[in-house]
Length: 349
Image (tube, rainbow, N blue to C red; front, side):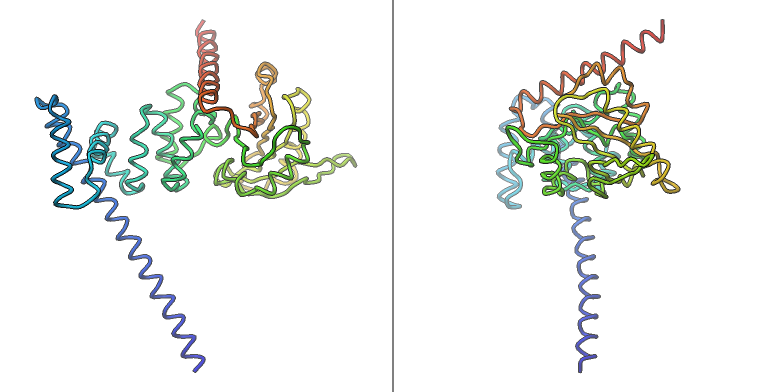
């Protein structure tokens, strides 16, 4: 009798897996077909109304069309949705791109992506969405938090950004510039007023899941206050992570106040120790991330930290108003790109 019950449970689990998998495939196929349908509808609307001789009557025609479609096919065919269809064609005029997207992203994700005017920014979110399998909610949160502007890749020349995104799309090759951010938004820690480095570290561990979400989904937590011994002296690494796609250990040091030049030597010591004693075959050299509550930009520039595989970023425990954050990030991008242009001009001379 017990064997019969056990067999029944096993059979149920097998059939359940089959049903769930079939439903998943059906949902994917429906999503794929709907995306193509919406693009085709958008193409008709754009060609015959928006770009055609009826452009001046376009609003009235779309209003009437939405009403008739709703009467015959139910909700979901509002004026807003029809405009989303047109927007889809505007942002993705090449049907081949739509064929590729519909196999990997949901219609909701694609609709959110069409709201992004800048083509490089849209490509960034598209590739990261595919890579990390973001839900539409996660995608919108990433856009709202200005992830692209906070990622190092945004501060590179356009051709470099295009090349890195192309490699990510075709080869699944991820560049560290697509991984590390500045600043990191740590408002979820609940830290205000005065706090110590220990308070910051403890708060991160309490909210480790949120911290990893802010870092990126490929980060895996390994250790806190990891002790390493060099010449009979003990040192303690604040936080140690591993990044799966970069195949690198990542050391994170937490600092109050602005970046100091001495932090470079400390981080180099940790990285060289880990490279010698902790790195296994097939892994890349360790990467250091120094998180400070402020940055001395000229210090960071003169020390040429990236040559030592070290990155410095600010962290914000209290978010400024959205407009101020946007201005700060856009200014940082402009400054970084201007520096690159000046360097390229010097090389040409």
